[in-house]
Length: 476
Image (cartoon, rainbow, N blue to C red; front, side, top):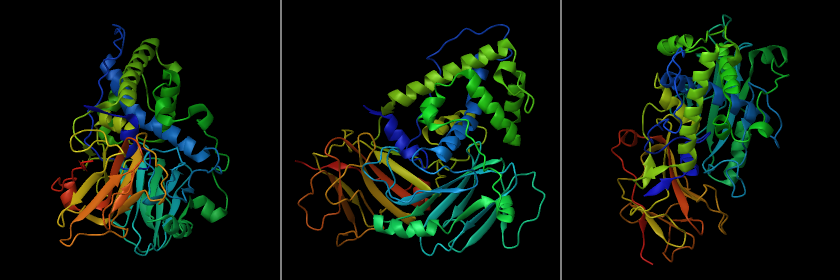
């Protein structure tokens, strides 16, 4: 059976993308089997559970710091947008399965110094989605075409401590945590269309209310704890962190980002380990027995997750396609939340977008550009969407490969040639098939992956009543 590679899973679930795919099972921590001490205040299993609970706050902090200060782009402070102006290009290697359908507008909010102002311009007929994630990676609001419509909108986003007025004309949004991550996506159908979207991005507003009223940015002196030079890629770094750095980061973030009330049992367990919220500031301040078992739990989890991260898991179906309605709203399933924090930070909720990805044909053989593949959609089985859908090809590592047509995707927002009965055929290959009026998505010369994106999917997708088409290899 084919192994699901890291780049494949990160591609469907990575930062700023949505997850699509049958959810892999959580890795078990059998790679490390330390001996438990009779003096330990908690068991090894409980220490591992605490690692899972802490992980979202740690990976969010690392990701925020890197995104605000990444090299080759002007530094950004919290409560300001970072706009990505171009669709993914073949020469780009920073993100796997780069998006050829939307431009990203991303903002990291810090509400500790007061509310933030967020304004959305008139979006016309252009699809967009602006999810708001709290520090625990839960999507607590999703603004956009599906939920709030296309008209101009004004929001005041604040934490529970805010007791001031809401400016006239603004809608109040209560954030569960001081940290908020806006992972916005705006439809862009082509490189030329992206130029229009860039102008639209400039009409979005994100700033501290204090800066709006006084002109002074409360985070002007922001300095990151983590830098690109130190970290490189957030997830691999997090799986190598020493206990002191990991738990110090967690404790600092936890003191500023309150746990949901439903987490009380886990809070009690953490207190049993010797950690008091707001009081314990450093890992080194804990009793030695607590440090030992927490370190063992961290190393066990890191080993198990690293094995899954680098070795991949066995793939038994051609398509990976996740329509779980609970994605992005994790409740008290902390192990699952931590797992997707590694595999899919910034995950869209399924109601906003779902992704199907495959690196195999219908016979579970690897896709290769030297062959020609056929996707057939009957007239009543086109991807059901309220927005748009697309098919994009990537190389084995998840990157676009340059082609003479400069074409990397086809979908409902492009000119398609339908059959007389209303059905649709799409062909995938490195060389253009000799078929009249062919709908052809050029593929890399070697092994490749195909990704089907569906934005604002209809109910038959979310219910599982609609199925992805087979990727059939044509005879040579």
